[in-house]
Every structure is written in C-alpha cells, then in structure tokens.
Length: 193
Image (cartoon, rainbow, N blue to C red; front, side):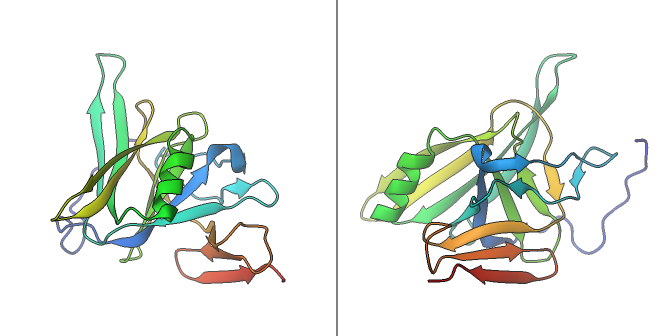
C-alpha cells in the first residue's frame, strides 16, 4: 500500500502510557487467529479461544514498559523483531510460578494503552513470543524484569478488538471471572459457584 505519512495529531513523540496489565495468550489455547487487514498492520477480528481457555494478565510496574520493533536482517531477508520489556515488583510465589510455567511457552502478548489508542500485539501462532527473565533482589530493589520477544522477524501489529482475560483463579473454576477488554467498553462474566 502506497500512502503518504503525515504528522500525527497531538504530541506523538511523548512517552507511551500503557495500562498496568499485559495480556498474554498461550498459543496452544487459540482456536482461530485472525489475519491482518489489507495494509498488513491492523487485526480487526477477535482472537477465538478453545472452549474453557482464556488469556491471562500480568501486572507491570507503571512507567517501566518499553516496546520496541527494530529492523534487522540481511538484504532480501529483512524484518522487525518486536518485543516488550517491563518490571514486576517483588519475587513472591505468584510471580515465581508465572516465570517457571511461562518460560518455555509460546505466546502472544498485547499491550493496551490508557489513551484508548489501538493495542500493540506481538506474536502470531506461527511466530510467537518467548519470555526471558532477569531478577534482582538487593537493598535498593526487589524486581523482576520480564521481556517477551517475537522468535523471528515480523511486524508489530495493532489490535483493534476485544480480549478475553481470566482475572482471578483458574478460568473454569467456580467463582472465576473472565473479562472482555474492548477498545470502548469492558464486560465481566463470573463462573457460577
């Protein structure tokens, strides 16, 4: 698609203001992953999960998220390698279990923004992200630095639709809550006890 690129409205060079939760999809839980639009950047349909499966969220310390999409590769083999890096405070059991169970998983991550601009989606079922972790505990800090990086070069995508996220407990257990996080609204569904 050939098109001129104008200056975006407002102050586009200001720092990003992501929400304090990164949404993570396990690739093995996805039934249908929608294609990009004709311009190759925006995903306009919902990701469909297998029955009883949901994305999860992980808290990120506000002001620590860094998203990057750097071009690399040799001539005729160029692409982008998107990633998102952020901090999670402490080293309690919950984050230790997350690191242990997600370190080798193939996943797709979504970073949403407070401004309402389209979310950034990193990864696809055929080219997912992998987690890397760095933990530091000292007299000055007690922090995990987590990075999700796409395995091979590709493109950072906009995600312009709803996300289904389990926010407390196992997704199918009684009393668990699934939230639909949409660009303009949210919907919560609680599994009957």
